[in-house]
Image 1 (tube, rainbow, N blue to C red):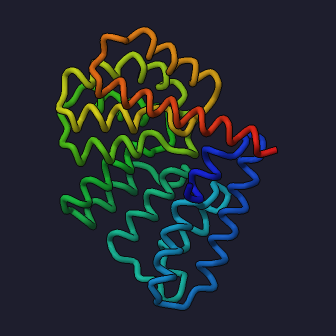
Image 2: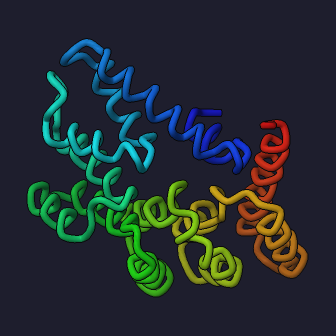
Length: 238
């Protein structure tokens, strides 16, 4: 289990925000103490971008602005920081479009698609969901958008799509390629929202869709099993 899953999925909801704050502070200290210009500094900066609390978004912005001595800010690091700031509600479409202008490549397009799905508004989530469920997308763009739309720090925004997922997953599997169907089944599953209510929804879908193909059934069952493990772990986090 990695640090992200331990905090965002396996911790008790009552302890989660304090653990996120501790994770953020710890990662930032490691970044600050790392040798300037080292690979360690680079890796820890990426870790901090992924694990920063919302309250520490300003420190993420400082990294993007080049205020950490020695940190190499190449296009990949810039996108990691831009996406971090987007997930935390600091950046929006304007900043993402500007970054895409700066990195107008295939990789840039994938990062921009992910970042736009991360925008912390209900309208942005609705637009991303519509695109994911009604538009022919490449495997890469679809995967990045799915990663962006369902974020650990944005589960209140994602909550309306849990029911939509169970209403849509079989159709998405049946009407698309294996890769598109599987990515949707795996990544749009409420994997960051392990609750008894969502577990019941998964169980209900499994019971009601015995005629579903083996592939989509396996994906939903694996999501259900992961959710059970998370709920058991949360009970131990007293």
